[in-house]
Length: 444
Ligand code: ATP
Image (cartoon, rainbow, N blue to C red; front, side):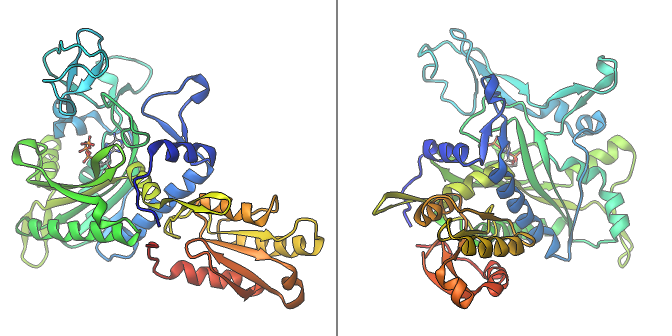
């Protein structure tokens, strides 16, 4: 497949046209930093989250899940230092009032908006969204929308450990929305104000944090590879001490070569015992671990792999997008991993006018639909219908033709190789399920 860089314009247009991603409030001129996910988008996102949950929670003995509130006591954010420090450096152009993140532009250069050079001093801007809880809007009713999902994992640490009796090392995972009042948004779903994160807090003995840090780095990279993300598109960026968040002893970003430049996809941090210690001090509740065997009380260290669902979705789409010239022009294909593909198969009667074919095709469709997300399409030529499915990444097309009525077989066409094989109609479901379980390799 082509490995030339995909243009964002093409991808954004495909996402809109086929119902993956829509601009929020488009009929009102849009709303910055928020996108809505359409019928195929929601399926792709659910598949990404399900794949992560399966591989980071269900397939492991040492990780359990949590689903906490987006709102929490404001004391959580005070304790952890976010009310003071969850900030980005803000700089403003005095001439045109455009605002930028000071670490994302070159202040020796002129303003990218108006071309003048008249910068204000840099000030720290808190990116947590504030709201009020209850009917009175005063300082006592302030609450924050969580800017990261992990804090409730720390505040619930003792409850989860007590309920599950997990022994170190073990992890607590969570997938959920987070909100950041980013100074500038953009690059499609890369930088959002409403985002979703998949976070794992992995609790270890303090002396073992470095070893687990390396383990999770390898694990995250292999997970990306298993979904078809090319290693050559990924880069590791180790934060120097001066850049690290105040709670982190070590941070590596897994960056991806986006069409608009290199950017963070996944963060991996050794958060030490910072969070548990802060919450212990602030709440008076000892968030520690008691080792039955050694009879020792200890505050675990935490290694945190954290990835955004939206950025993962963007990477999956960019890695999948391909254009192949063919007889009829350009064939656009999304080579999505079948695990991630929003629609697993499409059932197509070769000709719409043949009642027998249509009836048979609908029977197969009904049978498949009970188990898998599938589509039925009988409009226009079969070639066009294949293309429509290729464009949304459907891995297999099941075609019902004249021979089906004679010998009960149908063809299954593979999106990547475009090869077709005949199978008895009543074995299609098991054949698709078999293929879905098989490892998948990205076509070269
Ligand atoms: P950046 O440096 O790009 O602002 P960050 O270092 O603040 O990101 P983390 O706090 O490490 O990001 O968040 C973990 C993950 O959550 C990121 O790797 C990214 O995938 C996702 N994420 C963070 N902020 C955003 C956002 N504004 N929009 C979409 N995804 C985000």
